[in-house]
Image (cartoon, rainbow, N blue to C red; front, side, top):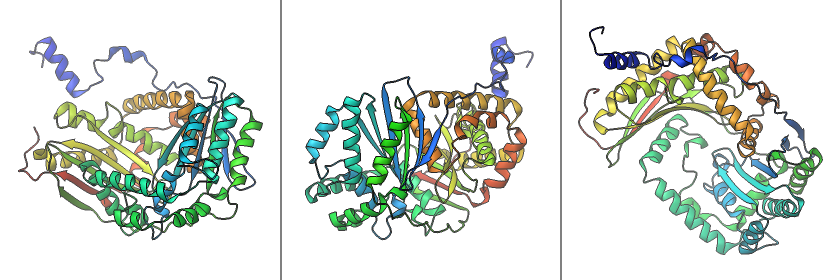
Length: 454
């Protein structure tokens, strides 16, 4: 290497250690993290709804997120019921038809958004904190949640839209990939239904089905409320209690069944295209918010979440196989899994899977270095502080705390707990909680002859 030109020596050094040439980082204390002073207030309504609240005067806004245990895993024998119910909520109430509701909401200056997953139906209202606007927006929000109209003509329209949307997803390689992962990891369980509905099941649902489901699923005991904004504790209580007490007070969702262990499997789905979409996924059994869960998040950043992660260095920088590869831990109410996703030229399908498996197995065995953890802490801390500083992102974080029934001190202690983690904590978390031997590898793409790594 000493005979190389200087520029080539630098490139060789960079290939061996991408951080070696960052001399300006040698004086940075990677373990020195800022501290969060956000104070989370928590209480429970008389109807049994948990409420988390953070006052914030930085913006003249209020963000209110309500989350019901009403995801598609709770459809029972009526697939698509929860999805149709959620998407019908803003299509008019008993006091406003769909056009009048949309016009009134727009006139108040408020924004409404929805989100849907296997466990939860989530709705968020963002409104100006001035009572002239917020009182109108919050009344409309409560009216929508408590007294939706569920009219037959609009049901037909929404059903057709949802059917078209699902049919489109089923034609895309990425969604075929995710559906195959879910159907294998959660075979025989409601989580296995990735799409959440079928054209046949949507066609059979009626407005009476939606009304019955809404009375049960959209109940106070099934509700979590998160509030961030320029509002007093007393007004935040009034907002949460008003919604909770207006809902049914008795029904709560049933527990989902346990998930049967899956076996290791390799699947390939033929799909025309210029690239193959690939996933390797395995079950996780960490408890959300636990020390092991935090260690797994930190280790995952080193493995496959950051731009300088091990997977990115090997597959993108060293071999030029893909533009991006990402590993993501996902936690649901009854299960969790670690998913690794990337796309690659079809001829490198098998070789890239073998490479990823070798990298993950080496990481589980050896864990990260001190330097890698220091950089990961700083990157995670930077994202965390940005999230806490922005009301719209903070209310999502509160909803996450609510979702997993975490202590209200979770946000203020997060960075201290992160700073306390060492490489051996990460190694232990991966060795004990990442069930790698039960993984499924799925590829979706054309069938072509396979090549060795470039």
